[in-house]
Image (cartoon, rainbow, N blue to C red; front, side):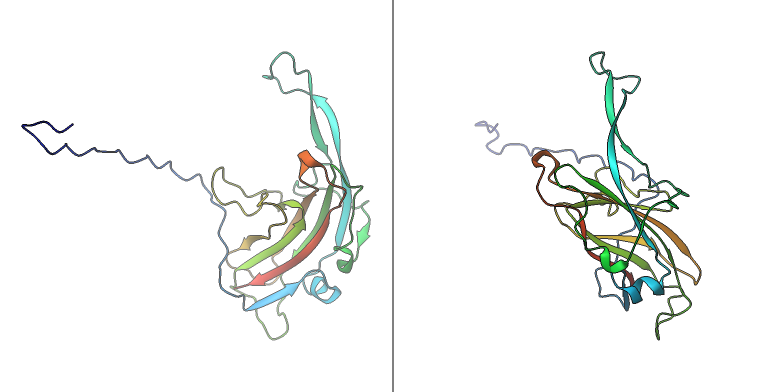
Length: 216
């Protein structure tokens, strides 16, 4: 505070907010530039280029015992069945759908969840384009939300951009599959489609707005 002897108040020093170290590894952020090549996975030709065979199954909410350290009044809780994001998950009994059917409006509305699974394989060439050494990005948009598993992993970092987790209502998601691909590289993709908003369960359903693999 200024005084007659010292009319100028001393400066207020504000300590810098400590920066927490980044957990490792961090999800890569895809480029903002236009891709040099893009494959539309919602077409027969595009999915065939990457060897994609799409399968789908509805996920159910099941009641399970509460976690060990839950408060005493919580005896049970809820889980999703199946856990189809796990690596090597057996989807052999799931129905196969055509890529052109990804836009079909699935589920019964309200609180509804759908799994979509496929394997993607990088080819030697995509038309005139050689993908060797390129960065591959999976670009999806699900109505209304999605979580994307790759090779049994859901890439995420709390409080930081995590393109595999929910981005927002009908928001596109772009997830780096690899910083440098080679012909024959395979990626096991599992997409968990979520109807929403969950707390205002809507009359609509779950469907793909877009699905592409972009190369940079």
